[in-house]
Length: 531
Image (tube, rainbow, N blue to C red; front, top):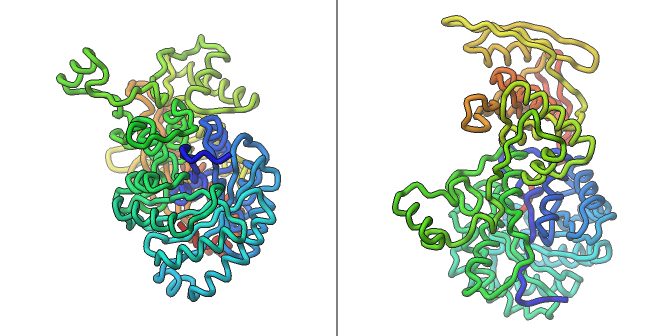
């Protein structure tokens, strides 16, 4: 039953969010995020773009099979192959939605599609008609709508409804819109289409001008009842609308919007932490709603005000978004039940085998340090538990480093299948020399595109967590490692990234040539993705 006062949320973290530069989530990681989105009572999860690669197809299929209580969506162009791939991947979804898009702005139609408006209308008619016969719901998106002709959009949306679409999306694909302008634009489209009550208008905004959330809220005031976005605002270029910000704006300023949402907002902070950890994209401390400083007060005046009356400087409670820190300290005397509870509070939902692995690693870590922090736990989960077996699997066996005043030397032993590979090299420091030794040992020389290391807590015995991004030809992969020894953490991160390069290459049908030089043979199937 359609409720005109309820705003639904369409999460595209696993599709548009993963398009953020340097982000590459595997199926296990995407399943973790999808499970937590479902627990947060998200309305729709866009699980991926099945036609782009076998990996994306299988990921959408896995989420559709396992994650219940939500609508699972898959993106498709207006091509028949895309639509049938989406339908096949969604076959086991409790409720399925095929999300079709085609560009509608003059600049996109002329320069990207090389199609006339009449051809776009024809493509829309055929694709929406097909999709409506293959899924429970069809959503139709006019890519770059905010730079499109309103009269053309109205005609296109009317056609899409006639062919079976029940959700009409108005994307601000390049973040060009201004809130007042966008509110009027959306109102013009909604009034012009004059669709029946069962048709929902949606909005998908980007943050190129820092206005994604403001534009989404402006659209809601115009009558839009579905907001599309991502956790932490992750996504292409400047990112998408941050769903946690839109949700809390609607909840906190109910006096203005007079609308309802179905989200369990107490899950916002744990889901934010989970996405940040698995994607490697850090949340700025001053980030609204979920940043580390969102509910912090350093000014003496502010502290006094909060102590006297909390609402003097807090317009919402930390508890409302689930960001109250746990006070229980975990250590070597902690049991499995307490450990499982902490995992739940951090936003992880693991099976029994994964919990056993995690607990064993946790106990080993307890022998190295007295107290294990939340950051330590998150690091070992993302680094050592949520991994897949790629086409090639390199594992660290042993290493040794020697550092002098001007030169460092490292020896590294790596196992591939049952074979141990060993080599040594010099470098500008222990990590540089270790990376040089690895490249010699495995005879593979990707480019180190990014490197960062941080402590998992402010304690002196914190784990060092390393994130590296490797690039080889047309593909990039991110790896993580965590250990009390930062050299070991850095080696683990490098090998993890190498493994992911091979996994990506296999999923996208790219052949990596190790021996005989760094020649790369591309059989690229991935297409440019809209919105």
